[in-house]
Image (cartoon, rainbow, N blue to C red; front, side, top):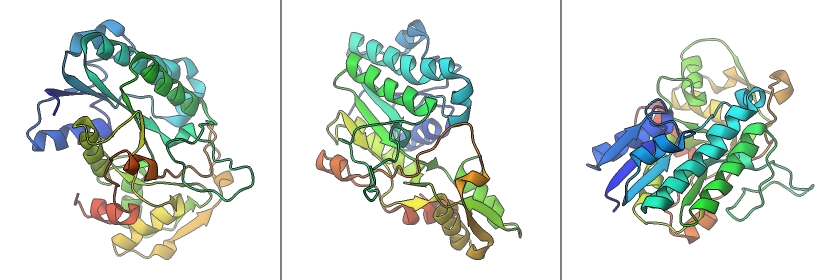
Length: 287
């Protein structure tokens, strides 16, 4: 078990949930918000990392559309920043887990039926965000080959907040119909389940360098929204399927980016439970 868990980006959803989960388990945790540790500043990073630490990098410019209009900032936070962390960890003898994304994949299977992406599949991002996150993966492993790159997808907490499940939860408590895209498919992932996987990795429970940690199975946003309504006893017929063209966005999203856990399981990571089971627990305030 590492001496101390250092969490960068602890003000975001995953960082906050991870810090709380680790704290409940009695772990020695140093949660650092982006204001407390700007990972784009090598000196700031070096001040917070010590020998024997396990750093978990949850800091990112995660707004996919904002990255399109702020490519320099996206590269600084999502690519250069993780490289700074890896360099600092390598210098002092600390470990690093870097959180990445399903959006490093493009959803193009060359006419073959889509299937969940595994850890050895070749990335082909579509957006500035995806390109910057892929560059971050490479910067981390170049500077610290023993680091872990952990890709996840469609993360939500499901309580109050701005994540997709939280928004659908509020919609379900109303009476109106809701139009949700049905032509984007991925792996909805509970932040609580992801936190458990990250701690397992931190404790040496899996081999790297690249792992996928997402709830099992696949769903469209439409499927996910209906599942929220069903879990809350609301009429799922109030959720109506539409195409992505109804909601044009600056950044291209892959039509399919579900993640497979098979390769990660082979490397020792406990598979995460099915996405629907995790979602039902989340909307009822369970873990």
